[in-house]
Every structure is written in structure tokens, then in C-alpha cells.
Image 1: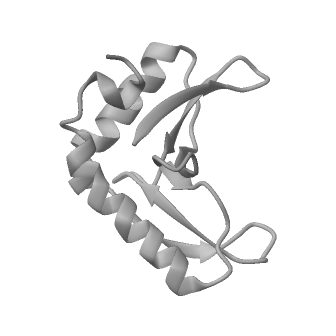
Image 2: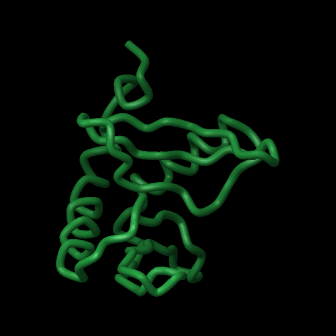
Length: 115
């Protein structure tokens, strides 16, 4: 796994968790004004994963399923990187992501592509 920081057209930063096969697993749904704050937001998400909730819902276009993770105040933090055709597949992806968060909180520089 690695976490990449992307910059959008408005100059704001969001993270993207990428699997070893190159596919995006999850993306941030909030954007930060600096690279450092974006990275810190991902680290916080991993550290406080037990304080988050989430679920499966229809995609905005209604053509499939997506998962979303939110904090105690209901603010969305992360979402599936793609839409799933089947509810069960989406749920499985959500559960794998939730299961990864504790492990990611202990990963070092290699998560960020640093050696």
C-alpha cells in the first residue's frame, strides 16, 4: 500500500490510498490547503479509526454502490475510490479498508513512497 497526495484544480490537496496493483482503494472526501495538512489528515484517520463510522449507499448517479467513512460529527472523511455494481462487493471493500486502518497507522515512510 502507498498513500499519494494529489492536488485538485483549486490548488487543494487530497489523499488517495493505492494498492500494490496500482488500483486506488480509497480517497479523501475533504481537501486541505497544504500537502502537510493533507498527510496529517490521513495519519489522523488511521490513528482514530475506532472513532469513525461508515456505511454503504447508492452512488450519486444511482448506478451502483459506494462506501463512505465519517467521523463522530458526521463529517465525511473517506470514500471508495470507485462505484461497485454489487452491494456485497462494496461491503467487502469497505470491510477490508476498515481492517487496514489499524495497520496503516504503524507504517513508516514506505507508505508515502519514501525510503
